[in-house]
Image 1 (cartoon, rainbow, N blue to C red):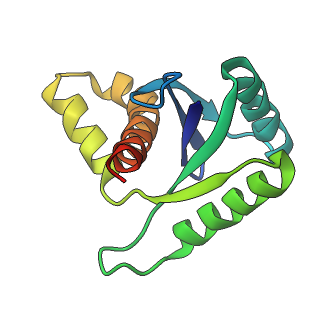
Image 2 (image 1 turned 135 degrees about the vertical axis):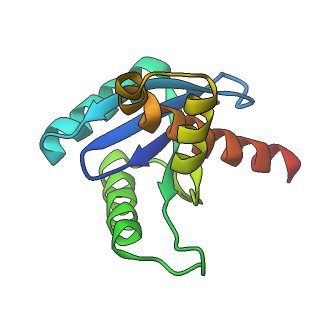
Length: 138
């Protein structure tokens, strides 16, 4: 069963997908947000192409576990996906995933321009891999 991970941001949506066994996450792409309709259409295409059965949306929480404006937007996005796509949508704590992604790219000596292009995709991978790891431990 394939699961798709999404790092939903103001300007982009990082997308990752699991292997068929739900063990590992691979980055797919970064969707440059245009309109909600176009963004949803691209997600539908990827869901169909990879036969995704569940979605995981990163939920940015504050370090004190509260949810700020970004978190509220992600919750609304997840609810819209659930209603529109009629499939399970899980919110997953994404605290520090973008920081971790940036750090990994810096350590790999990736150029600033390239980092901007892939950081959201890598954040989606980290969100999804964390979710998959949790599921296998349950």
